[in-house]
Image 1 (tube, rainbow, N blue to C red):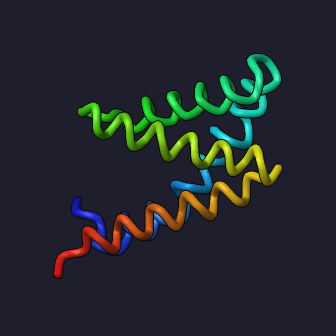
Image 2: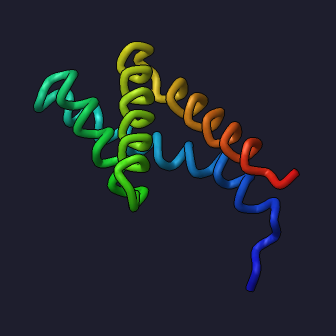
Image 3: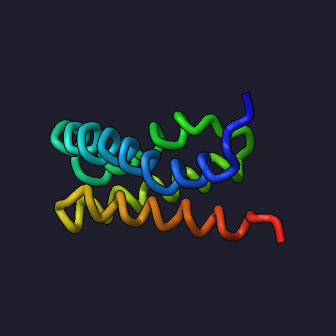
Length: 102
């Protein structure tokens, strides 16, 4: 069964960021920050975020970790998971646009 070519991009820019940010920045990060401090909480959550994406190269793990930390610091600064959801969704949408066949 081959999914509709629109399904994956739509999910990647909507449902994916909502689910991931709800878990990582809405649940895991606040717990880690409360137990390990702000810096370790954000960085630890970013590493977990990267690991879940199953990177296969150093470049991929670096990118996922960096973006996870960016989402985390935005969440920490804004006090809202909505901001990291919007950033994550925008990032995924931009990646999809850049990789769309010409």
